[in-house]
Image (cartoon, rainbow, N blue to C red):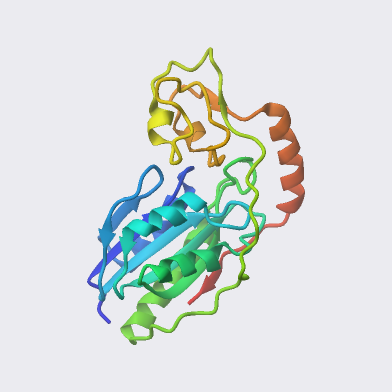
Length: 254
């Protein structure tokens, strides 16, 4: 099959998932369309002859529920899809399988998948500097495999690791707050929060019931005014450093 158009659709609160999605898409076509679903979805429709790279970060072994909901605005109609689960060094558990299931439900044919490692969004010194040269080489290899398969009209779906029902995700017991001395109430965090957890008229506050601790508000704040409770962050750092001590390598399924 000749690929007519390539697109990348991703949810990337910290920016690393976007890097992975774009790297794979660039390996499939020099020109591709990028659709950032981090803050809000687009209504998108695809068809046979098109290829979409879907990428999601891993939250506790699952894809973010808000991105799963956002995918409801995308129609596949027989288009091919590559699914990427991007995790911070612990494990991706059922996330890759879940993403593929959600994409398939929207009418896509899943032809490949990968579990990729990037900087951890909460404890940023874990997997710092990733994706690195080795990760980028793996992403290029994935794109080459996909191109070869589609050229041979091979649309068979690879076996992806994971379990159904998916692992239960209970959320993160801490949420970013604002330093009232640094916060100038510009509202950027509120406008870009994917779940509307920050009031636009009071952007120095956080609705903990809505917040999914995606850390997007922390990464986009121009005044570095948002962050996590340092005591809880230190405890999380200690726990995760043990679980993420060994380097994890990319896993390709194509």
